Image (cartoon, rainbow, N blue to C red):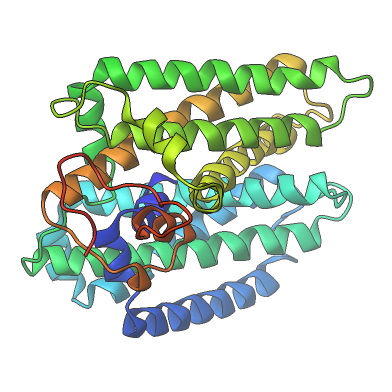
Length: 356
């Protein structure tokens, strides 16, 4: 789900996919995709045993792959022959298999787990959850594949983007800053595991306790790692995330604390919970698995937070300047907000000229 965060957190990508004309096309793409998938579901539900979770997730993956295939082309606005020639197997494979099939399965597990938490068990009532799992996955994949196709169209036409959301920049960051990244991943892993362990000290074990604890822990770690990723060590002798955290007013901190930190920490936890309940088909959450989920979520969110902060720094260094009103994500709006008398929003990177 890193591509989703990048499309909203990084200014250059966010501006490209939130222009009014793009948003209108995107809404139409999501509406048409949802309608088509609903019709397919209605025709297939009496033929395909969607009460089997493996069959349901397989169908969701295939439907999401086809959705990504179609909506990516709509975003690219070109013929498939040209797209195949210009994009190549690596980008197309990533869009179809990762943004399409894998992402779709993750979202279906998320929906099933979330419904299970609120008391609507897929195994007891498979029809409603199955429909929601497929349609939510389809709509999200359609949105993201369309946006990625739109960004890719600009790239092919010569408009530069400091970051393309395919994970290549993340791999480069891990190689170049292995020590710093590893330290934050370690901190996130330990914090997530400790947060998940909170359930063990409760008199009555509740599913919601580790979910909330890991989500809160992951959101804080993501925020701090983001700030650290924006640190340019060549120009500062101290760890600036502590300074910026202390100098930023609480209201601004809360805006970009909950997205992507809180939102995606809870999302990853629910996806892992869904794997345990609906793939492994265990009715109870094993303590070691809960701790493992917490550790995984904490480590992943620390990595992603550091990466997004680093790419934000790169964009500032390359002159990517956006007005606050152009961005429609609370996380980015908080990050890029200007100063005021009550306090300041998250500062720009050291050595930069600020946000125009």
